[in-house]
Amino acid sequence: MRNESLHQESVPAALEGFRPTTTPETSPHADGTLVDKYGRHITYLRLSITDRCDFRCFYCMAEDMTFLPRDQVLSLEECLRIVRAFVELGVYKVRITGGEPLVRRDALWLLREIGRLSGVRELVLTTNGSQLEHFAEALQEAGVKRINISLDTLRPERFREITRVGELDKVLRGIDRALAAGLAGLKLNTVMMRGVNDDEFADLVQYAFDKGIDISFIEEMPLGAVDHSRATTFFGSDEALTLLRRRYDLVASGETTGGPARYWRVPGNTRSKVGFISPYTHNFCDSCNRVRVTCKGELFPCLGQNDVLPLMPVLRQHPDDDAPLRQAIVASMGIKPKGHDFNEQMERPKVVRFMSMTGG
Ligand code: SAM
Ligand code: SF4
Image (cartoon, rainbow, N blue to C red; front, side):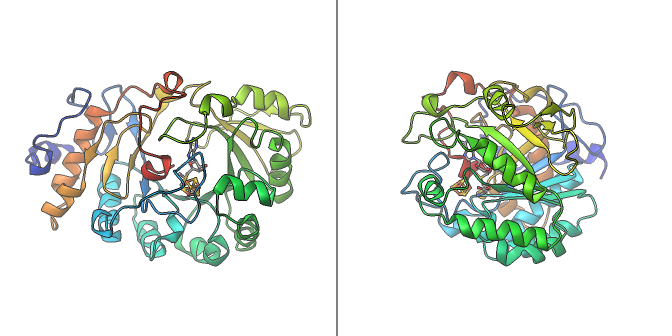
């Protein structure tokens, strides 16, 4: 598709009256690419296909969550239309997330269809691992290239406290099943929380090393109002690295997987890397290459801001024409903020939606 056609398309009715919190500007577009007003190329879409989850992690959502009624959630066909439109605009990496993506019925259908799109070079998934033992082989066959599995503890009781309802055993069985299915590129994601799991960082690294998979530690972000003090639980990457170096000889590797993680390795261990995702202590907004779409079809150009562009009305008013959808996506480049300001909101999040809504 040529770029000029984007500018010839009429403004979708759904965008009339749309009031972003930052000023939209015309973005310079190279042919087939999305470029925001700060010159960042957007090549990565994270799509949340459900706000539902079989866990209730206390840092991610409230215990008594109410989930969206079905008619407010994108159909899987609409999800595919959105992915296709992004791919036509130069996006080549797609992460399916949630909520818990594998609790959505027919999630595999969507993954297979996305895996078939010729422009998609990397189809990846984020999951809590609870359903992995049932889906590992099918995910491999669907063309999923890498899977991030959330794992904050290796202790069953603590796992139950963090997730409020989850069973650690199921997740560990899921990881083994994924390894047995030959799924390459497994990575654990661990949210660091002082007084909650900071005594286990080294054990989690050892578990990842034993399995021959990667692990990334994530600084907890102020998304949604939770019932604990994030200022108290916050644990920064530098302190975690110092802590891990008491047990491991970690050397900065300079590798990148196209995301914000910075990686370390133990000399001689070629199978596993240890990463840190540090939105507070090592801000990476300058190199941001992604946008997020929720299961409601809201396009959030930044995880840490409230700027939003609703795609659902565009999709439903133009069921047989993707041109207005592409134009809306292009318009979103004008409202992508420079970055988040998490450091100012440790205790009072300005983003009221939970991570389970925006998609991690
Ligand atoms: N349910 C799936 C899972 O847990 O992997 C996918 C969705 S979950 C929202 C994606 C990731 O976001 C998980 O690794 C989770 O630990 C992380 N996450 C959730 N809330 C967070 C927060 N407030 N700060 C940092 N990471 C968070
Ligand atoms: Fe569910 Fe993932 Fe959020 Fe935990 S982190 S509640 S598993 S969406």
